[in-house]
Length: 483
Image (tube, rainbow, N blue to C red; front, side):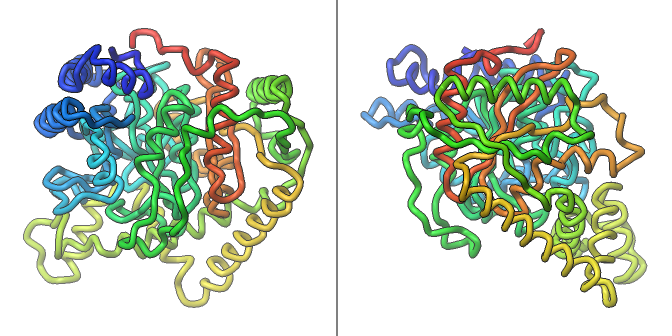
C-alpha cells in the first residue's frame, strides 16, 4: 500500500479495497521501521491518526466521499496542531504544545485527512539543507550521505521514501521546490495569500507560503484543493475563488507559450542539469508548447535582496521568543536582561542567530535606507521583470537548483555557498508568484528538478503542465533503493 499515490488511495478507499484504519496502521509501522535511517519525523501522532482514520471510515460508510477522506498525510512541524508539540525544529519550542490548529491543519482535518505526525525541518525554516534542526539532520533517501534540501526536508524525505503519500510544507525562498528537486518529488509553492498562514509559525511574513509536497502533480492538486482558500483570520489571505485544480490537469498544452530565461543558464549551473532542463523543454515542445527565450535582467540582484528582507522580517518575528510567555526559558536568570539574553542564546541555534543579527543590523538606524529600503526596491524590479515576461509567455521554465543535493556537512562552514543554492527559487517569493518543481532526471544517481513559474493564481496551469509532462515521462515513478 505504501507505493500508492494520493489519487490511488482515494480510489482504493472508494472501492473498499482497504480501510483508512488498515492503511494508517501499515504506514505507521513502516515509519517506525524505516524512519530511524532518515530522521524525517519529529513527532508521531499514532493515537490521533488512528482516531481520525476510524472517523474517516465511518464517514465513508455513511455515504460521504472525497479525495482526502481517510488519506494519510503529515504536517511540517511549524503548523500549529492543538495539543501536540509544534517545535519549528528548535530547542526554543521543544516544550510548546499549540493551543489551536492552524487553518491548514483544520481544513485538511475537516476534509478527512489523517495526520500521521509532524515532520523535521530546518530550525524556524531557516536553511536549505535540513541540517539546522535541533533534532538532527534529515537524510536524503536517494543517498543517506546527502541532504534532502530544506527547510521542508523532513516532509520531502518522508514522501520520497514512501513513508506516506503526501505532506504539507512551506516555502519562503524555495523550501518546497528545492527539497522536491533533491528528492524526486513534485512540490508547489502557491501564490502568496492563496493558502492561509494563520497558525503557521512565521519566518518572513511577506515571503512565507504553505503548499503541498507529493510524488505527482495530480496529488499536489488534491492536497492544494484541501489547503487553499480565504481565511478571515489571516490579513494576507486573498479572497479569491479556489478553482477545481484536478479538473484542469487534462488540458492540452497546444500553443502554450513557455519562456526560458537566458539568465538561468550562466556559469553557476551544473551543465548536466542544464542538459536535463533542455531535454524537458523538448518533451514539452512535443506536446505542443511553443518555446521562447526571455530575459529576467534583475535576477542577479535577487539573492542579496532576499537575504536582507528575509532576515529583517525574521528578526522582528522571532523577537516574541524571549523566555517570558512561552517556549524555552534559561535556568536561574539573575535579572530580566539575563533572562532575555540567555533564553535566546541557548534556545536559538547558530543559523537562526546569524539571520537575526543580519536582520537587526539591516533595520538599525543609519542602515535601514542603505539595505532594507534598497532591497525592497530591488524586489519591485524583480516583480516588474516577471510582469513584463508574462506579457510574452504563459509559463517560465528553468532549473529548480543549480546543483544536485550536496553531502551532509559540505556547506556548513560556508553559509553563503548554501544561500546561493536558492538562486532560481527566491525570485518567486520576492514577487509572490506560484512556482512548481517536478522531477526531470538524475545526476550521479541524485534527482534533479525542473521549475515552472506562472502568473498570480495560475496554480492550475502549473499543475496542468506538470501532469501532462508526467504522463509522458517516468522520472516521478522512480523509487530510492531500499525504500
